[in-house]
Image (cartoon, rainbow, N blue to C red; front, side, top):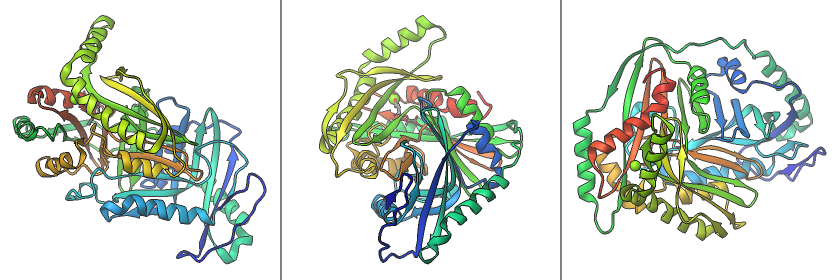
Length: 459
Ligand SMILES: C=C(O[C@@H]1C=C(C(=O)O)C=C[C@H]1O)C(=O)O
Ligand SMILES: [Mg+2]
């Protein structure tokens, strides 16, 4: 692979399973494009769109169409499979990119499932354990600059037509821009929640399993929201962006479904050799006014049950980061992260990572943290598999992007839901520790439904 930065240099084409080569071209956008509008204009590509906005708004990506899929359905090996396929695709790739930014050129978009070993239901049909692709077109807004990347696959013996093929594809892409129609959300017909008492019995069951070894298990539940008409991704996306301005806003479409949400939680970000992660666990509601809100934050900071939930996450992430970094920085005590509907205990982590690590190897190392799995990880996952009775699919799992130079970011896909036809399945979980009270955990998950429920037009 060669980043041409203006001049094209083709590396030796190795024996490869695929006789095709990825060719990618980046151009700068002169006239500013409204990012969600761009997503909406490609409604004919429904099922093949991706949206990403980080909390700072400095990195936004919209992927349209599928140039090359990297999908894997065989559980545990999915990380190495994606890594291997991505490396192979890039080995011979030709990239015309004269700009020095992350998130442009060939970028892999998608996510992993929460637990490849959990039994599947039809809920997530259409999504793979590792569900990734290189888009045909991508709009990137990085630090206020906008770029369009066009990606094509071309046969190795037809390389002289590469530029022409790029032009053709770019033309087709401009032709398929449709007027973005204004979509209003359909009305909610019904919200179907899992039985409250039954769920609380499961919480009790989990508590009874906690002991000297097993300290924390994260238990989730789902609600189904039925609508009078079909849901359109962009209308939900617009609400999420407006209402959850400091969240990771994501949408990953597959066939007639869309997994979307507004997460407060970073799993890992990598820029060069600098990596960032987040310990996020421990929750309390927002107050009705500033004083009440601050009093609640103070209560959260000093509450032993929430501090315990949080500390398992800190312990695990700190250990993991120390394993792969030459230096790790994190404050000694948690801070407060305020989202629209909830506040959390939050400890940011950063470090300088060893050269041997890739973003995918870091994801594999960190996921699931005790914020979504439990502590220790493997025992907690076994308990979740046994008692939860929920197909988490991509919920609570890594979702994000990875560019051809190894930079990228993955969030933990919480505060999310799966849109499908006239309904949405929304997810929320909470950390169960020995001091947990089932009723309070139920209320906590109800608060965590709010971001999606509000974006869906509910309360
Ligand atoms: C599991 C979720 O959230 C996680 C659990 C938290 C908790 O129990 O306090 C807080 C933040 C998240 O790490 C969710 O929102 O679904
Ligand atoms: Mg909690």
